[in-house]
Amino acid sequence: MSQVPNLNALFQAAQADGVLSNTSMQTLNIVDIGAQIQAGLGTPVDDVMASEVVLVTIMPDDSGSIRFAGNGAVVRAGHNTVLDTLATSPQQDQILVHNRYLNGQVLYPYCPVDQAIRMDQHNYDPNLGTPLYDQTLVLLATVLAKAQSFIENGVPVRTVSLIITDGADAHSRHSARKVKGMVEDMLRTEDHIIAAMGIEDGQTDFKQVFREMGLRDQWILTPGNSQNEIRKAFQLFSQSALRASQSAASFNSLGGFGA
Image 1 (cartoon, one colour):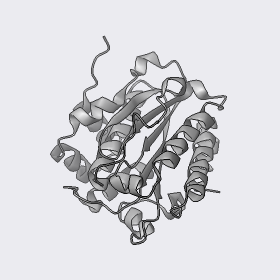
Image 2 (cartoon, one colour; image 1 turned 135 degrees about the horizontal axis):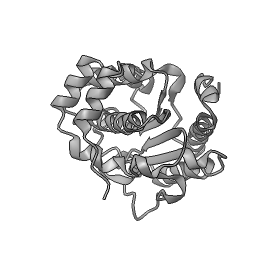
Image 3 (tube, helix red, strand yellow; image 1 turned 90 degrees about the vertical axis):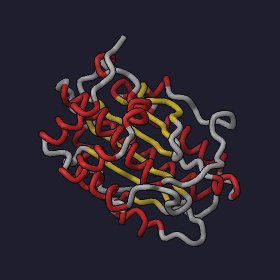
Image 4 (cartoon, helix red, strand yellow; image 1 turned 30 degrees about the horizontal axis):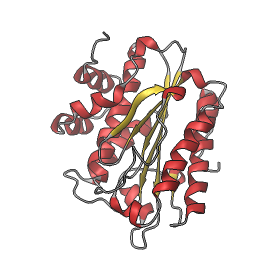
């Protein structure tokens, strides 16, 4: 049995390394999300035999509006495209993937690409709400904890995360400002890419929503509400994730989608 990682120790180490600010540390201490983070950590660090690691993390929206707009199938296909693309990487053995739906269900914790579960009609039923800020905090804390556990073992790590929504936040207890603090901390290290896809809903300014969460414009996708545009947006992310997996140099040269 692998030991369950001590999240407090990992976050304190991240703070000591200058990754986490005092404000973000306070946010993580206030937010009672330990069990949710643990659910995503998956494959123990000791089981990964790579000299460097890339974490690819996806948070598909499973709110009811996805279904009402008829976009469930294209979101499933988009996620599966990301897996298919990463499976073509010569560096596949150093990639770990994790999928946590926007309402907190973990489809699979961090695992090798060939062990990831594909999204289908049985495991993805978009009919819930949009706790965008709360769950982005959970997602980023999971990314950070997993990355820090590799760092503690002397393994260089880079991360690429994608947040997907087709609506503005609803029902979060936490604010965009708290998310922004975490995002800015992570981006400062230049080892993390945090991307977002806002699928047109006819009323939300997604660029503004994601800016308020601290994301950089070049990593924000705003496809229209058509299957073709959503598919293209997933393809763009897939290519960026593939390039990010290839080397630290190619990761650092990624200037955003299409760059």
